[in-house]
Image (cartoon, rainbow, N blue to C red; front, top):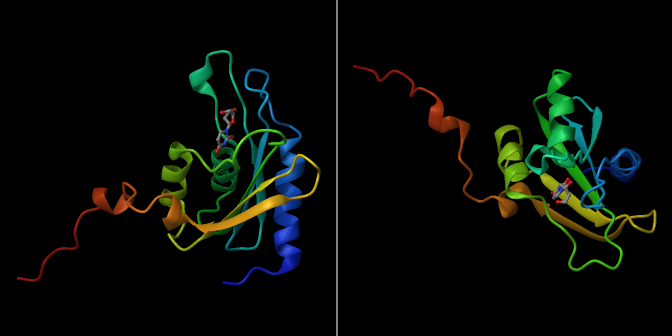
Length: 150
Ligand code: THU
């Protein structure tokens, strides 16, 4: 599925706007995400930290969970933006988020990452989910096999 420039721009816009709500007083590292559902809707997410650090939830998971809370379980694209000026190599999604993505998204789904510290996407990188997590723990492992014919 080829994304139009309009839709891609809308995804970056939503990720960037949602990033402004990042609650990251501890890391001071702002992340925004936006997912496109198969039905054409866009949901945003941002990272929300906690004084008990382990309770922190990443932007990508918040975006996907917001969509799922609204009845969406199928996705066509994900955009993740970081405020990374002066910080090392461009970030990629963490392992926990990759596993959550693999629950709902096809291995072929495109994931765009970019630095948004200047206000417009820079260092844009596009990869497929399967490049980030080639061998996920699959929901299929927990499903019963179809009954065998006798
Ligand atoms: N973070 C994300 O939101 N997404 C990622 O893919 C990597 C990390 C957040 C979690 C935490 O609030 C901050 O970035 C630093 O780890």
